[in-house]
Image (cartoon, helix red, strand yellow):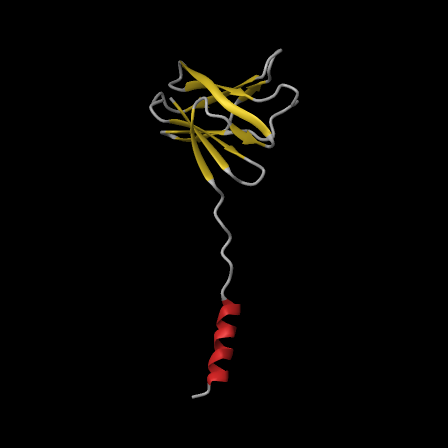
Length: 130
């Protein structure tokens, strides 16, 4: 038996294996739990909903994020029973640290709402609204 040849093929096989990139981490949080978002502490402090005449729903999410930031590092998306919505408008803090993210969603079913924040290292913080 040619052990040198066998060993050589094993080395070739090992070199052919590709590294599979790791999936980004996904962290599920409840409203009020803090997380590090672009180096700053953040949390969702609450939300409210308003029914609109056209069958849509407005969802306003209150986000704690330091007011010295002039803008949010990115716009969090709202996941709901009918899909995904980007914020329609953003109200920066007025003398405080609470940002208001306003979403219009195409359903009045608010039994399942989640806001997703993606950090600079691609970690996803999914905050379940309760």
